[in-house]
Length: 316
Length: 250
Image 1 (cartoon, each protein chain N blue to C red):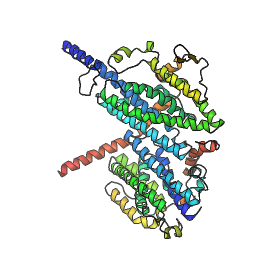
Image 2 (image 1 turned 120 degrees about the vertical axis):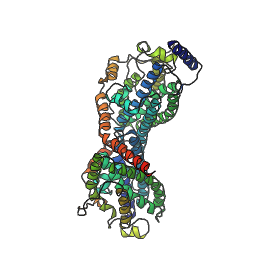
Image 3 (image 1 turned 135 degrees about the horizontal axis):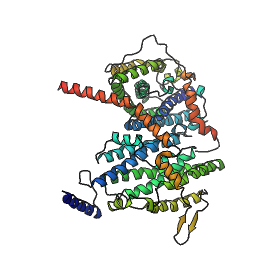
Image 4 (image 1 turned 90 degrees about the horizontal axis):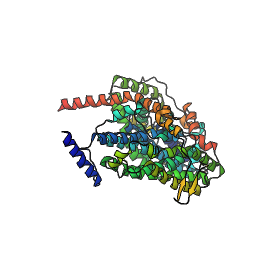
């Protein structure tokens, strides 16, 4: 039996090495399945929790055009959550079970959404920085070995690119409108820069899950490499806008042709991912409340379906 | 403001305020599918409002922009129905509010498709298609909530009892001005009452819900700027950023 599993695992590894995608009905090692459940559900939770910081400004968006765009964007995030949950369900876990993990604090989601949105400029900043960072992660992950996740990511990345452009357009418009607008952008940038760098996770040396995941192509690049790609791209965009990166140690390394930053505050990072960031409690409470207060609605829908299924069966 | 532009403004205000209320659900709905659906309906409403403000601004002679109309008018200058400004409450109240409006909106915008005022007819053609979906959505939920569990029936009946007082306003005379109706630009709201009542009755007859007592005192005043207290708070929130930074272009 165990020989048999070893053989199947060898064959599985070979398929991945040869660039095949794994589909829901294929055999897969338990650990591959559990890692993917974790990865995809974390991503789904991030979309759902991620609706809240931006949802916070829908009712205050300062023009009709911005209101429509922001609402559409947050709705896209709900849509992403929806098909990511479906994608995770192909691995044999229900949405209800995943919600349970989120609401009890067992499941993680992107650390960035535990920071508050305090000014309108944050809507631009989230598009530019947060979606920008997510795109770097996700375009890499779109080449992962699990078919349903890979396909979901292709679609998500298209929409994220649009969101990023929308964010950059909010920022460009604020900056062009004068000193007041530019000051609002700079203040927001000061708050979001470091938390965005944390989105890429710990240094590779402190990221224990990686080797197996690299072999199985459910992690394709190291955290530090992706973070660096983001930094190099974003510092130049910031400079083009005349914004100051809030890092006195930032310097350009002529040898590597790359920007070097000061050290990330890993104490803050650890606090946020272990549930003690500025908004962790708030975000989970909001989701739990929505879920609990919606219980009677879901029950009503189930009761109605049951009644009407029965009556149509009787009619037949 | 002309009688025609005031009529267009009232239509726009109805759509904006209802859309704004629905958008408050985004991220808080009972199921993920409803986060998506309610946001979608909110987007339709605010999108229709945007077109309606544009044609209202044109009809006024472009003395102010749509954003100016939305962000720099006081509650007493708003012309929307009292029904649409009522708070979301629980999901039942939101659905009942939506259902009562949709049953009215679907026939209003059906008729407006042949308005003699061409810009309005064009907006109505798009809006009517969308309203058919909205009405289907709110009707389907009325059936589920009104024929679901004891709790859902009780909550929905309560919402119906509370909101019923704001339904008469959709069908009373005095607004818009006779000349706007006479020109064929506007629909006389009095002519929509019977159709609306039939739609409502048809859905309710398939549920355990009953219409409230006949002697409920009906409220009105939205078309003259006499609103409930709720609208002021909604606008304070909605207008806060735009008014804090009047110099910034967004």
